Image 1 (cartoon, rainbow, N blue to C red):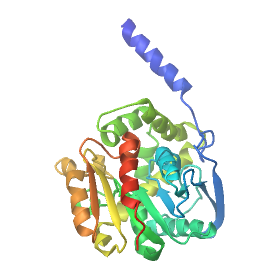
Image 2 (cartoon, one colour; image 1 turned 180 degrees about the vertical axis):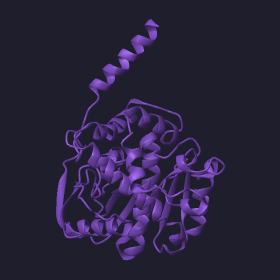
Image 3 (cartoon, rainbow, N blue to C red; image 1 turned 45 degrees about the vertical axis):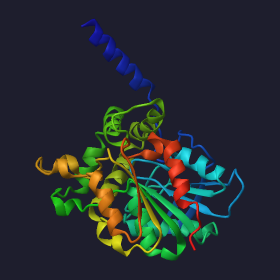
Image 4 (cartoon, rainbow, N blue to C red; image 1 turned 135 degrees about the vertical axis):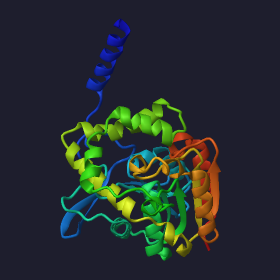
Amino acid sequence: MIGMLCALAAAQAAAADAPAYGARLEGFEYPHPVREYAFTSQRTPVRMAYMDVAPTGTANGRTVVLLHGKNFCAATWDRSIGALADAGYRVIAPDQVGFCKSTKPDGYQYSLAQLAANTRALLDSLGIARSIVVGHSMGGMLATRYALMYPGAVEHLALVAPIGLEDWKAVGVPYQSIDQWYAGELKTTFDSIRRYQMDVYYAGQWTPEFERWARMQAGMYLGDGRQTVAWHQALASDMVYSQPVVYELPELAVPTTLFIGLHDRTAIGKAAAPEAIRPTLGDYTQLGKRAARAIPGATLVEYADLGHSPQVQDPARFNADLLRAIGAPAR
């Protein structure tokens, strides 16, 4: 009994000390200075936060754009940004509109095509005509849509644990309304984030480095803007569920590398799926291979011991593989 009370007290103390951040992730420090691109989208003034990191090694004249996932932010690319800059690349890491340090406008209609157009507008404003595009998780879906829309602007496409490689609706995951997604988002806690990330992102492992990113995500649900954050995350879930890219993979016309952790089991709406199909969803032991066969000339890099976030779980190995994949400029 005494032990249980001590454990409860410790948990309450930890919760009391947990950081709370604003709706635009105010209070969480990014690894590099954050700039903002102000523009109008859907008749609404918006501001897109981004990091623009100059090469720290001998400049090679090439640019890498890093696109974050739904439960991630530009800051999560910290170690990859450093490795790329050291190798001579300019690195652009934006927070998409509706996420992290960017604005979350009321009434915004989310689509992968809209986010791709926003990204293209940001790069145009920076004078970047062509780049290597790296997308993780939902960012992999976005990177795919970007490459389909702007193939001439993509030197190389790198998809890191991309989702959308299966059509969840078609395989039996039931539709959820945005209100249902929102109700689920409001239940988000640090503990629920940690459990999910340990299981899906990190193949059952947990280190202090992972804690930082779980606290970042949880902190937005602890602050005054939690309802705004939860609502826009719900809109993003609806976007991801409704807009699979799997059918268009054969249309990609740019050099592509897939980075897949074989312990990954990410699938939007899996918890609401019928129990009979749930184990078949998000099976990246098959999804990566299937995607690599579908994408013309694609290269597949698999990690037998990693999960959904190889760039966080084993950054040294992932960054070495990424640099190897993009090292030779496309002709």
